[in-house]
Image (cartoon, rainbow, N blue to C red; front, side):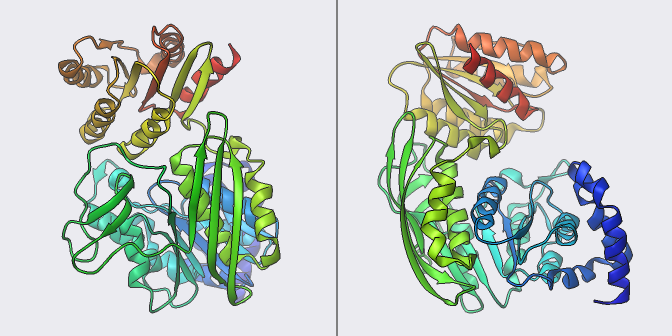
Length: 473
């Protein structure tokens, strides 16, 4: 290690106690000091300390949950260095400086090339694993400017484009992430994960999805969720066979039973392995099935203790504590005779996932309490309106989900054309307690036995507050 890097590391360690108390960029204080003194390229010397190497996780949705699950799994077998919920190169450097371990697990959100610097991150961290969850247009907006989706997609690709060792682990049901692995199959190993079941299907109107290889329309044999499914193109590109797959699922109100099978190559031990587990988990939503598959695939690829794979998976998932999933997640709560589904759905993909989750419980007329997006979020509203119409509610209530009451009323007037009996409550963002109490009141006083409350919310805590009030009463 060079003298300059040694000095930078020592100064960064002094700043360590400060960063541990911080949040957001405060968590990255040690890494900021190191990068200022030694330069970003010097992070490569920190990465060299890892005996196995680094794993970087990215995607539009599911990054934090997948990273958290992977940390839980790998921590049973090996000491790790990790960072999540702080998507910067300095957060990675901070973990490399402050923590101990032979493998790194780092969440890394990328919205564009300029701010995400994915090619730089790949070069200096030199990961042995890049994990893709899913790629869709929901998070393509940066600093109030919506970037072209092709630029957003390219930024994700750059995180693995120059890899010449290790693994890409990617969602085979998503043609966009699958293609990133497909293009790199001659340079690195690729592990795909996906669904092999008939119990999950998308009931929304099918959208046209372009082939990421040639741009022509993909043909779908089966759709699981939005653009995820079993697909093929006349150019020859088609869904790769998954190495880790969900082969059976049984839905119950209080629990789900999952069967997951895997056949893949283990990196530390350098040979093929197989496993099969039957898991019992809370009814945690379709999106978390993919997060589960992503984390298990990555764990089985990189754990040095292959004899522990099945027992460790059971230890983590059979006793799954849902509190680690960020607040605001969608849940179905029983309140008296009512089933009330509520939680954050601030983009089209998330709202559709919530609707799919709720749909399995609906056995009668439904009321939809919809919290709207804001100014300049018409595309989000269009997606939300499709979700509302797909569930075909008997009654709709509209409440501002963000700041603009005027914009919320515009959205309401559009909904009212389709649902003439719809109601509007102009609740102010500045009186959040009043908004929370009214939403709670609307849910429990509904004349319907099935209620869904979702859409935008300026704070995830809003959803959690309402949920806790429902649970306690």
